[in-house]
Length: 193
Image (tube, rainbow, N blue to C red; front, side, top):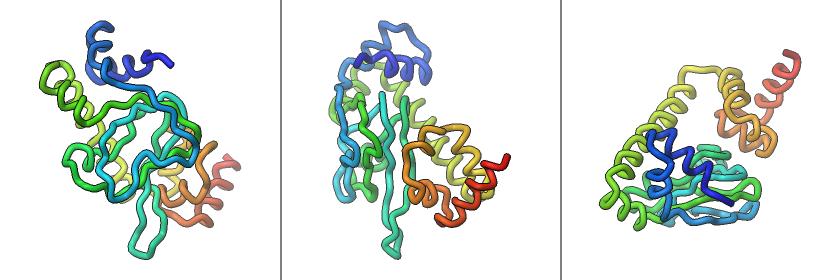
């Protein structure tokens, strides 16, 4: 596994030379995560931020009735972590689990803090990356309020088709905020198109 995709991710967030991007990712380490393995469990503090090279993960929590609710999917070339737990150093309220075998590049909280204080470009990369992550979160929140389930499903098909191929339907349904039955109906309608 080489760091080409990770370097490209850094350069997409903050344009810079390949040499400088290589310096920024120097402290990232390789990890293989088996299908169904947990990257993070509720109650633990998130100590690592992962860039997914291969595979798919999801984050989830339990609602007040004890139902498993998917809060996010993470696929290839996407960062996976509980940012709130990671940066505020508080226990997570979510689980992050591999849905497939995964290969990631990760950086620890301590190494990230060192980079923030010693590499000005890493600090700017981190700032822009958090803004991007906030934008994704805000967009998802607004889509749950302003889009129909059909529109959210269509967005998922267009943005992350590999999730539909690898995630159980019950996880997709809870992510979209609908029941399994509603998801089956929507899928049938999309197949007719």
